[in-house]
Image (cartoon, rainbow, N blue to C red; front, side, top):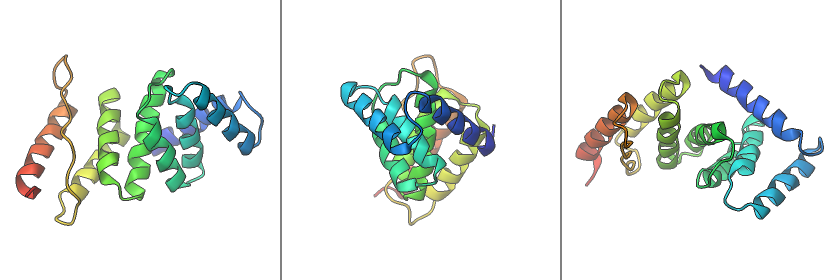
Length: 167
């Protein structure tokens, strides 16, 4: 599943959430913020705001809302994946490789065989291997049920990176 599928999924998600409020974005934004203020432990509506800004290619606001949303629980199971995917892309554009990589790791634990995510992982790995990169990434904790191939790759990369790039 490539970028086209992800974009269609974002549009679909956005259209579903749009059913709950008026057509204008200002009114929809107000609805999402009010819902979040009433349910401050749920990240669904923050993810919807981030998805809107992703569709509009407003990376700073997409980054802001998705970075905040990933710290919350989600009622809709796919929203956690979508929010982490959005954050990994928007964080890249904002040059926040640390949070983007962590979000990408989380998305990969949800959908480990996703070609889009694996492609993004290759781009992150290439960036993080350059000598001008900021201090590296936190190591992914293995799942209780064993370590997946993606997790093994990330752990191996982190060990190599720490050995060669950390003071």
